[in-house]
Image (cartoon, rainbow, N blue to C red; front, side):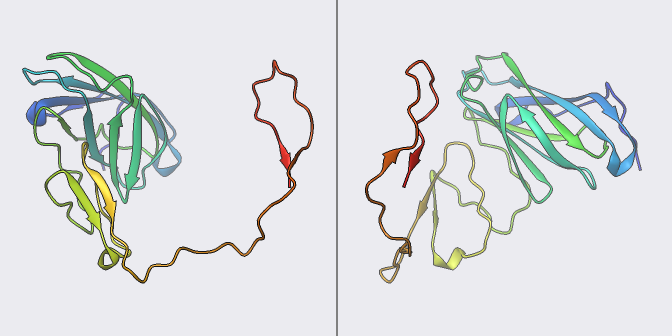
Amino acid sequence: MTSAVAGAAASTPGDGGCRATARIDSQWGTGATGGQVVSVTVTNTSATTATKWTVTWTLGTGQRVVAAWNAAVSTTGTTVTAVNASYNGVLAPAASTTFGAQLSGLAPAPALSCGNDTSTPPSSGPTSATPPSGVDVTVTQADNQRTVTLLVGQTLGVALGPDFLPQRSAAPASRNCRPAAAIPPDNPSPRRTTL
């Protein structure tokens, strides 16, 4: 097993309209009881301005994401997907931004896949259902208990059959709501209500 070394970096080529470079900033412990902080620099390699980007990678054995910053990070199985935050998606040609993640467990700097909206988005790794190409993804009853991956820019539509009935709450409708306590006007906290 290759051990992770703080300062080690892994870079992807500039396909997909962007290049992503991972760097292990710090690490501690050993094996599954260890952890590390990884920073990723995303650079727009396209000749046009990108407005959104996505970076994916596969976690090392026993690793999991503990926290992340400057990106919306989600995990499906061992595949991690990071999508730009609202404030760092627009990248002019050759511009870059950085996001980070704290991981449990130790592994070498991850091999990254990067894409932005100036070209075809990157593959998000193995899933139990291949995302369809095009703008929209539609999920039907036949997709029950299947994983569907959305790429940046796609929308999700859910088709419900004519026999679909929404669940009804067994609780009676609330009546006569009243504030539990007055909150001073200079306090921005929401008001509490007793039902």
